[in-house]
Amino acid sequence: MSSFDPEISNTRDGFSSKLGFILACIGSAVGMANIWRFPYMVATYGGMTFLLPYFLFVILIGASGVMEEFALGRWGGAGPVGSFGKATQERMGNRRVGEAVGVLPVIGSMGLAIGYSVVMGWIFKYAKMSLTGQLFALGQDPAAIGGTFGAAAPEAKTLGEAIQMMLQNGIFGIGNGVWIIVAVLVSAVIMALGVAGGIERACRVMIPLLFVLFLLLAVYIATLPGAGEGYRFIFTLEPQGLLDWKLWIYAFGQAFFSLSVAGNGSVIYGSYLSKKVELSSSARNVAVFDTLAALVAMFVIIPAMATTGSELTDKGPGLMFVALPGVFNGMGGIGWAISAFFFVAVLFAGTTSIINLYETPVAFLQEKGKLDRLRSVLVVHAIGLVVALLIQPWTSQWMDMVSIYICPFGAALAGLMFFWVMKKQTALDAVNQGAHKPIGGWFHPFGKWVYVPLCIVALVAGAALGGIG
Image (cartoon, rainbow, N blue to C red):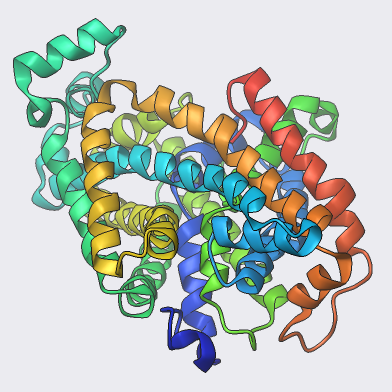
């Protein structure tokens, strides 16, 4: 294991080891896309027919975009604002241009963190209901389960309608206000303890437990009558389906967004990393374990749905908060434990993701606002809490706006800075620092001419199709 560089650790917090860094990055990548969207996409596009292109894109993005963002942050010694500024300083002697551009990924990270705060409120509520048996008591009635979720996620068609809801009920009386507060407080406490003392320590516990819980669920689901149909479907390959261009777009989108390349979280985590750590192996581990998390979730959800003859018809929150509880509740007495295991595992996945999302704006206030860590954490989370409470009626639209437009644009900007603005040798030195063997000559031209254009494809395709990941 490699400790953080002494010359950096005197002024900046950082990860205490390579393992801690990898677990934190896995935590940032493993999120809701792995759990409620990935199984749906596999079900929609036919098992291995979807998985093969997905694996291909995971390899391509992991070997280019993930490595690039880690290297950019470590080279810049800062988040996107500082690292982009250093890149334009080197190329054109003007730091302010890069810093101004770097604000966008910070905004994207904050926007996604706010939307995630609402989702985490639902997850905390469902975890509590699962552990206490309240969710199991609802049985298999979709209306009863859906009523619980609907109460946590109100919808308002107009601004006037939302304002009326707030006037009648108060901000804390709308939807899931109390549990959103809990979610934001948990994130704030972990982050206030620092990178090594809070984020790394939390991920060292939560990520292994997440995999253990999901694996236990997958093993038990495999013993249930009817689960075999789910496995047969997963391993089905239809060569004709590979000719569908939408399959390739959605497989790319799933890999792109799942690996969390957005010019923010991976950049800031990279800035906390020792210069002695090999980036290629770190990026490979993140890509592998993020994919394993998605696969394990798939091996839980698709066979579980198959045991009751249910179909995956919802790619969003409804799958996890309405359909699956009904399936678990239909398993008899063991359904209570299955539901509890599942939602606690999801709680770990969400918590490790949200602390990564809030870390970029926190680091920004530390770097540019000259605030200490505690005050930065408090300011960012206070803003996040207030906005999260206000946007509940439009959470879906809010998340679409951020993920469809701002995140891929942030990834493209980071790619442009690293592969186009930074000098080629500087970029190669940054990515090879700490490497046992220099990366191949393919890396820079691939990133410049393939990865960066793919970021633009993610933006354009997402806008045209209403989201691809």
